[in-house]
Amino acid sequence: RTIILGQTSALALFGLAAGVVSLAHRQPRGAGLALALVGVKPQLLLLPLLALVCQRRWRALAWCAAASALLIGAGALLTGPQALFDYITLLRSADYAGYENLPQMQSWRALIEGTLGLQGAPAALLDGIGMLLAMILVAWAWRTPAPPADSDLGRGVGRGVGGWGLGVGGWAPYWDLRMALTMLLIPLFTPHLHMHDLLIWLVPGGLLLHHLYAPAGRAGMSARQRRAGFLWLWAGYLIVWPAWLMPDARLALWFSLAAAGWMVLQLRGASRETTITWAQTAAI
Image (cartoon, rainbow, N blue to C red; front, side, top):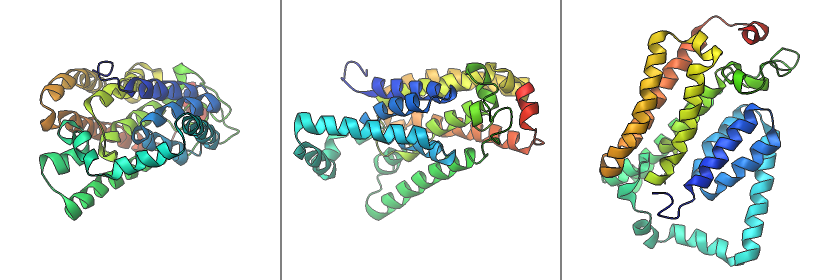
């Protein structure tokens, strides 16, 4: 569907996936450059950027901002500066409401305005509540501070794909699960999410799969929790098809919220455990 419609969701998927891998390998420049590609659909980028802010990944943010400015500048040179203002005017026009195809979207806003039929101030209030809730949950998920610089993890012990679940290179423990939660909250935050944008689900799906197989993830999850994780993975794959056939039901939105709720419970359970020193965690 993405290819047939000529959409840029595949570019957003590549940017998010490459950004995640670069962050896991402590490559802020590569992460920032990759995430800048997601700027073709900026509504998909804002929550991952909030996660970087919460963890104070300033270098990755600076590279993302610089690359984004370069892309915008190159676009302005090719189309002329007026094209940017015309685009903003289009987004604010009444004609755009029919173009964006709200009934087909899978976002919180589509539920409020498309399914429930609310308009005006009530719709704006509920839209704002959804966006605020998503931001609060992302900030809560990343509340764990980075390990001290002189700790094993602060020096990069566990660096690489095998160490993601522990807190790679200064990242919070269960980094993969936290980033997956961040991306699953995008439908609650963004007002604009089409079916073809669900292609980015491959990233949180991959992160969850890694968490289920990584030594740290297995150590912190019971067999029942792991089985539930695999069920969520299969459900995420299967739900796309009925969601595409029945877009008004917002099945993808409901799934995102339910899966995000399950991840919140996993992170809450992990936060209740006795604090383990960074050196002990790296040794697991």
